[in-house]
Amino acid sequence: MKIACAFDHAGFPLKTLVLETVKALGHEPVDLGTDSTEPVDYPDVARRASELVMSGGAERAVIVCGSGAGVAIAASKFPGIRAFVGHDTYTGHQAVEHDDGNVLCMGGRVIGPLIAAEVLAAFLDARYSGEERHVRRLAKIAEIEREFSPGHR
Image 1 (spheres, rainbow, N blue to C red):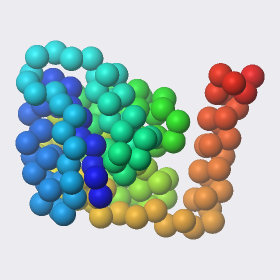
Image 2 (image 1 turned 90 degrees about the vertical axis):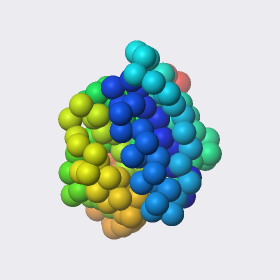
Image 3 (image 1 turned 60 degrees about the horizontal axis):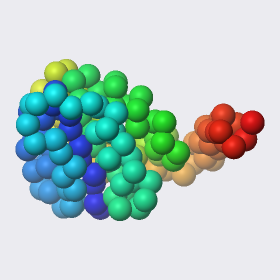
Image 4 (image 1 turned 30 degrees about the vertical axis):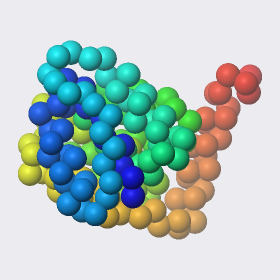
């Protein structure tokens, strides 16, 4: 899989680890920056990764900011993006298996490198189950997106 990988300045310290882990697991990382600890705005980082997933240029994304929360909030504003904060392996795989999560968000100031690599592996190894209850719940989420989209009202 192609994996969009994006980092803000607080996520930058995990950049090399994420890119190397994605590659070591047999996937193709797409480096969307940043390239230093100079401050950048996390919504811009989330946009780059989310747009690449939306366009089909990447199947999934990993976005790292300070806490993971900011990029998850920003990424979830894009249609079809199901971003989640994952700082444990259960969430890393369960969000994909049950919720068809496609964007893993982590906090570079929250999670250590060894756990980050394990969470990333759980995320990349997981597959959506397609079970009826999950399909039904995702349809409800899609309806919320449609209901509140600008063209619907």
